[in-house]
Length: 251
Image (tube, rainbow, N blue to C red; front, side, top):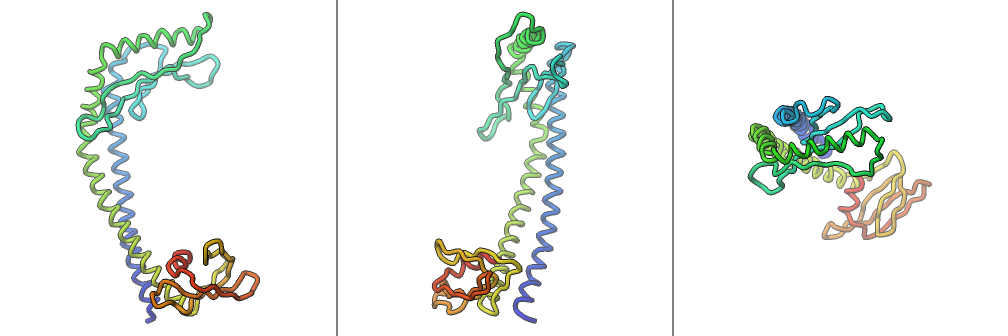
C-alpha cells in the first residue's frame, strides 16, 4: 500500500468523524432555534398584555425583541408601521438582559387633512403614556420571561462550543494530511491540473500552468525549484520558490 493511499484512508476516517460532528452541530443549532422561538413567544405573551385594547385600528406584533404597531393606510396595500418599542439590551456581562424599553418613531410635518398621520400622532402620545407609567414593569416582565430560558441557552451553547472545537481540530488534521500528500506529489511525479491555473511562484510572478513539480529542495526544506508547464505547452522553471506557499495553493 502506497504512502498516499494510507494517508487518503486516514483522511476518510477523519472526514467520517467530522461528518458526525457536523450532524451533531446541526442538531444543536436546531435546538437553539427552538429555544429562541419559545423565548420570543414567552416575551410576546408577557409584553402584549400591556397594550390590550390599545386602539381598535392598530395591529400589534412582536418580533425580535421589538413591539411593532401598524395600521392600514389608504395609499398602501400593506399595514404601515406607526412606531415601535424595542427592548434595550444590557451588553455588560451578568445581570438582567434588558435595561429599558425605548420608543422608536419617525417625525414629519403633518397636514391638517392627513387623518392617518394625525391618528398616528395621537396614538404615539397614548403609547408614550403607557411607557411612562409602566416602563420598569415592562422591563421586569421581559427579563422574567427570558430568564427562564437562560439555562437552556447556556447548555446548548456549551455543547456547541465543544462540538465546534472538535470540528476545527478534525479540519486541521485533515488539512495537515492533505499537505503531506501534496508534498509527496510535488516532489514525486508532480501535479497535473485539469484546467490551467495561476500559481504564485514569486512576488509579482504568477504564471498560468497546467503542471507543476518541485525539485532541488534546499537543506532547510523551505525552498525548492519549480518546474512547470505553461498552458501553451512551454516548460519553464523558477528557482527559490517557497515550498509551503506552493503546497497551500494546490491543496
